[in-house]
Length: 254
Length: 255
Ligand SMILES: Nc1ncnc2c1ncn2[C@@H]1O[C@H](COP(=O)(O)OP(=O)(O)OP(=O)(O)O)[C@@H](O)[C@H]1O
Ligand SMILES: [Mg+2]
Image 1: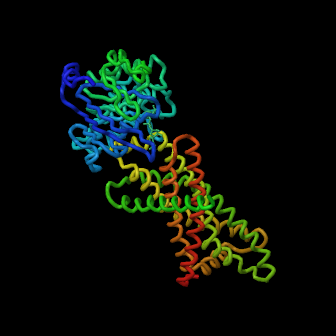
Image 2: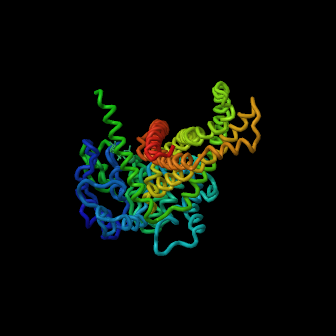
Image 3: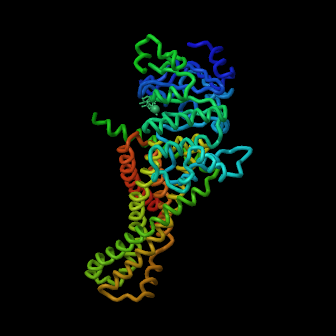
């Protein structure tokens, strides 16, 4: 693993915003994660790559508290996710955005209502008053202002992905967990989304975990790569460094 | 192997009971999702009216037409309004309405929540500061529990009207006479148990639909299976509740 100091230098920050230590998660006899560890620094984008079914989605669902870890600890912005009550969990989730693999747009609501949902539902001390402006700003970030009164079913797959991204970003989270943001998109749209993720990182100084199979996206959007193999963090490092690795399991990805 | 089916039924009964128990733990503590409850009541109640009205009308009509020859045989034709009104209000209208709703509402809830589950919409609500059980389940179960009794009262009235028309196809019963006889024969003892049990029908339909939706397995066939078994299980529950209700009413002397 690369020295923490080096990474810190690359992204000019040594503040750890998320720390996963010895995470284990099983479903019955299916041991998905066994002893997975990873640190995320402020302002850093880490790509997590691994085969289909290797537990990438499970990993970030544990981080956001949708799944409960069997063992190990997850610390997000100084809080231990396993020990939070419902209210504290909600507070944490304002600061951590989650882009779902299947977009998870609410079918029964318009795009506007979809975007308003997190704004209106989160109990925050400073409830936003200019909800309309925030919705339009989020839509213009992804270039889809004209869809505001449409239903999700009227949009194409790529448009839905961008709306889901807008909904994730509308709370201006400090940490963003992207579950396969470019899968199922054409290469051009995929590249646009990847560049968008970099823009967001620069603009708001966010940290992200990007789960992806798409090596183009990984190359564009991430500072560092973590390889999830056999339930552990098998290798970690920047794209170019991992590409030169001599391990066959690592090589097979490049 | 022979007991595997039985075991599954027992496990599922346990799961549904636990799911229903959670309803009582969550329904009466804030935050209350009042707007969503109203929206669901509108969908569940108002949107089911035409179907309930049509079936109730036809059942009232048919029961009357079919009862008539038997009564004529015994020279008891004048008893027609009494007889049909008691059987319609005590048994037929509530059960038919509940079964129609198990089909229409139960499958609707099962499919809607099922597809929300497999497309991660329920998880998305969870991470957006919303307790999905409160927002989706409590509102729907409250709506079915309160709306199905309303629909049943409505069905009672429509089916009696159907009965009135039915009685006038072959014979002549004046409007006033018909309703006089109906209100004379239907007592509080008939109304109360038949109305009380409909709350349980509504609760069962809501809980089973939501449970099936929430426990949907990945994939599109999963959604179909959930909708389907929501209908089957809630229909069976309607009959079981009906059986128990009849026994209790009988024990209490409400006959
Ligand atoms: N809620 C669950 N219950 C039981 N098993 C689950 C659950 N969620 C995931 N799994 C199992 O965990 C394993 C990892 O699933 P996961 O969705 O994390 O894969 P993934 O790496 O995201 O794959 P993909 O790239 O296809 O999305 C799979 O074997 C899956 O069957
Ligand atoms: Mg996944």
